[in-house]
Image (cartoon, rainbow, N blue to C red; front, side):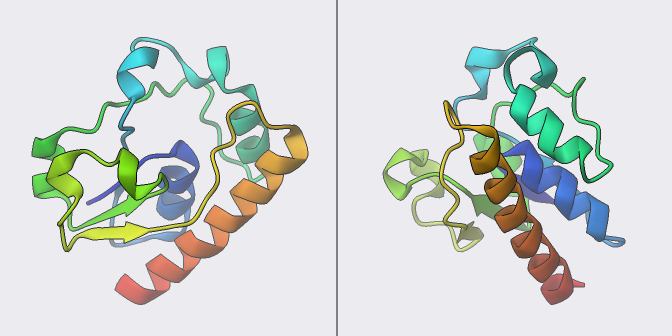
Length: 128
């Protein structure tokens, strides 16, 4: 199991992986509790739709310490200073330098998706 912080990563990882399952969970997802991505993340929905992936009805999941315990790897796309304390010294954590798309335009989201796409393929190739 993989835990990430952006649904792009989960969906792209799962798109390429045949042997593993990615689960996206955010460190601040609680503020979107009960909301579907199409209600607040239209650009994410749109750029993934271009890849044939529909995330419009997905709802964010809050990352918990329990989830982290069961994950094989934890892909982090936030700054280290924003990590929960239980992840600070974890040997499961892999940092991907992906800038936050909040408030950014469509072109930024395309670029962000493409960066995550490359990294997801590389991770799948590495772990099988």
